[in-house]
Image (cartoon, rainbow over all chains, first blue to last red):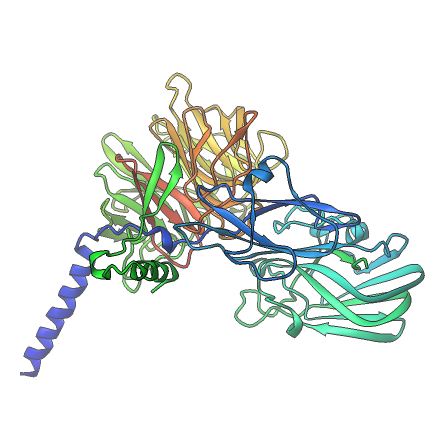
Length: 279
Length: 340
């Protein structure tokens, strides 16, 4: 009896398997609302600027609309409509203060895009006279223009290979020493860095600010927002307002985490700018 | 219920019309431009991954019987053979861990396959059912290589006379020209900054659209260019496709079809499909923004709709439908685009 049951069970299992693979699959056309638009493309003169900068948005896709905000409020389908013909006509958004541009693409049939979040920073001139030294120097493959790359207001792109804006290090500690040449009052500093897990590039584990032998403050990876997001990140290090003649920024990188195919090696740290936001 | 269905339901209810009389039908997606527009069948090649797993789906070709062959680097079944409707017909191949390039050539009425394997540093010619008939080892005789590890071939193209062109797209960027017996005839390309050089000679095919002047089309993926060479290795010209990281050219009729793995600045997950017309102008880009030319120059392309992740190759059947194989796409199976 038992054998008959087993035989029946085997016949059912085998027939299910073979029918599943051999029957001609039914054609199933995907609905438009299955798919999501991509965020708008942004073109800008500069993300870091001294006086003002311009930006325009694009999504050349039939019936797509772009909505955006500049005041920090969340963007949705009721936000300001970006006139796509404006960008074709060269009418761009003019930005004169530090702001965060947020924008989405909407469409009558497809899912709205994820939100594009693009900060713009009006940058102080405190580094103009500063003398900066790096210890150690950047890896020869990602040496950029040396320390000059750090204060030239030129952002590197996400495609970091062969991009002269980025400096790359695979070291547990990178020290950036800044001599401002005069007393300079500061209450924060921003490090512009990169994440790209598949290229072994991670946000640092910790960033410390020193003046001489005194550690002023530090921030750690627990503070990073969405650290695994591939692309450019700005790490802000705030501290109590004080005067600096010299400052040392120590960037400490962690080993690659468990589960990563480079587990145990030190993660790469990439930096393209350090700056202070203008008042 | 998704948001769109919910909104539709609310407006229908507001009109006081019973829902059963007004079933809401989602609109089929149509992608592409001009005369090359397509509906999307996401389920076309889906199989039971326990029995027929894939890793990267690298390339696809159609054989003389009309079957669609997929090459994956999963060594449980490197070749998966489908009918055009997506029915599984056959699998074979367990010895190609770096299976990357797949070309089909008909010789004296018989189909043969050329598999490039960058982990084995070899090109392997097989019968259509997988029997190995020739292996091209790393081209030591070229004088360009000191050890097999420098040779990472990505693609082959086979001429009518059986000559074989191999693109070393992940290695030293040479194009190696063999005769049908596997004897090295010529080497050209290589790394460098000249127009005849490459950073990523990823794909190659023989362009016979002008039968009097056949030439080679070679993708320079990193520089978003398609380069034309004579069959004896002389650089002829380049076709600029800014923003399009093109994998391999596939000629069907008078058009060139190219899986485009990344776009824009090369960020991950930004792929689409590119279709060039007889004049090598981009006329359709399913999944991307509308192609536009200003003063004869293509404006930079970018992904517009999240249909594809990393398209790596396309195969076009006699009905004009496109089968899209994807690299690094979560072990998913190919997608079929049905021409409308």
